Length: 124
Image: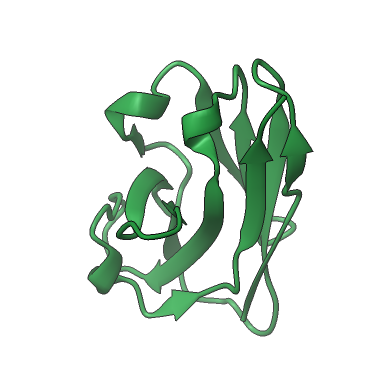
């Protein structure tokens, strides 16, 4: 079970930190990804982190502005979003998938577990 939080309304150039908390028993290693979906558009990959946290990957529009990290002691993954732009407005989802290799997953249908999403609106 995944729960996202941290969304909200922010002005262009501002920052937000999204959190994705995994509840329940999570003894297996799992990779995590963040995706977003704007109204009328397909779900889009944003960032991903491997189970160890050592490997990350970002979609080009967010490189240098967003940072994904994880705290295994808390079963949580974070998405720090800086220099936000109006085009970042979307509902953001985290997804998790148990893995046996320490790699990132960027394709949405490779994930079995999804949160309900948190809305991010960037507007002046």
